[in-house]
Image (cartoon, rainbow, N blue to C red):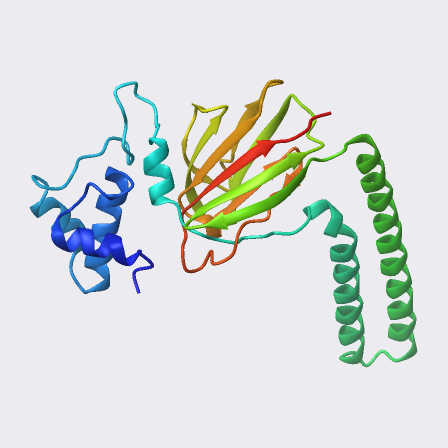
Length: 267
């Protein structure tokens, strides 16, 4: 019911916060636990503020003032998931446009059947269908040509899932053109907490991302390793050099995940 791992629920009940992934998760899990069993989570946190770890700005902050969970914390907090959005929106655009054209045709025909204007309406329907279909075909053709040109001009990286276990997934990256960038966003209406390390160095900024506020991390020429810690995997979209990353399985059951990328070859 809480979507929280059993070991964290036991830790909450026993007051053992050391195994928790961070102070933010301590407070978030306690509130979610309380709300699920019918208690006022906010009031509970306030009444027991003296024994519950404090956080700043919604997340644990180290002395440096940056969001930088340790490697052991991130691996301990990570969970298995799979969230594959499969393919770019641009590649699906022709299909979407054809679908819109079909819907428009159906609406025009339906409107015509409700009218009593006979042959005049039939003529208008035929004309509208012809114009709609022609416009759709021209648009699809134009977008297809643009997509083909983009594919020729830009070679996207190949990201391959090598292994995944206990919330830690490993990937190999080939054909990566450096310098490049890693983009992380969220589905409409969703949000997630993100932390990114490049060659072992935590990148700024870290924090909450959503569909309107994505996180973009620059990848320098010497990039060899990338690690991404995701708080809410089902809501998260990760793109590397224009390629959408396919996630491991069980994202509905276990929502936090650590993804480790190794750059095997670059262009």
